[in-house]
Length: 390
Image 1 (cartoon, rainbow, N blue to C red):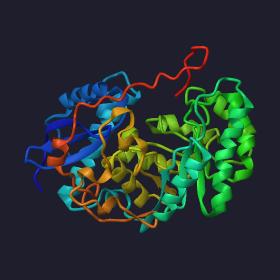
Image 2 (spheres, rainbow, N blue to C red; image 1 turned 90 degrees about the horizontal axis):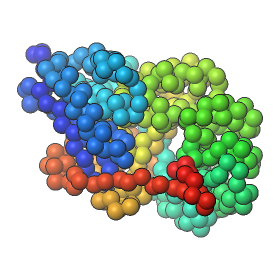
Image 3 (tube, rainbow, N blue to C red; image 1 turned 90 degrees about the vertical axis):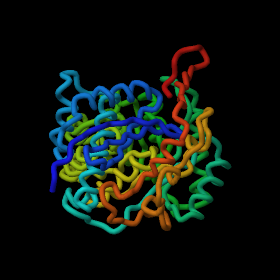
């Protein structure tokens, strides 16, 4: 087989808020990846361009070497912008490698361990009646697991009325669907330590699938405290972490039950390494992915070859895809020549054996998409004007 080298790296914004990366070789072969951090899209584009300047001319098959170079050669390491830029390029390299060899990416990582992967979807979380109706529609499409926002902004010490509102939404789902529906609640890192403890106690009777990002990832000591004092509800976190080095203390300190790395921050191979590391601690991995089709396809490649990935998030029907905050509309199938690899049947993904990431991107659709969208900061505030966590 002839040696293929990287000739061009493009970064392209597409509707509704996704950032695609296309790597082209000297033979004209193309692989696709996806970056995130859409609120800093121009910074991501710049980071991809900076990394590309350093890897043009390199052999495409040297994925791990190039990934290490992108992470280490700049001296300054870490942070979501550089991480997502490197992850998008790395996904595209796996897509290329698979296509050049005619194999799915998971075949290079031990081969398949399952035929299907369970999936969960989002149902909002604003009003009891709204979440019940939204969950009913999801169940009609075969889903048995959903995730919802827990609450809006909460102060360090806030009214217990807000806790009651959270409980009312969960109670409405349990009353309607009993335990036929699994429910995860996303605190979104916006809840402070004291209120997180109050919410954990109030939600304990409902048998939640997990509570996600109970506190901000910056407040690690608060996470340890909540994890060791707040009852039996499983804790999930990790969507804003970028590497094994950031995940390892969660495992070593025993503060997490489900890891949620995002393949568009970690990269595909690093996600696989995190999953293998978590398995040694008997911890599950549920990859974070309210993202676009390439990120989902890359996540699924790891789910197909790692036995401790019991469920996969996806963005079908997510509010961001429906014209939220003035964004252009777009959904998972819009950029695929064949949407079937990313469709669920009775709420589960079927394993496919397509080469690379298992999907074929329609470049014409990508080029025709609106590229000039902007996703602004929400700038949440408490009533007295102080900044509130979004």
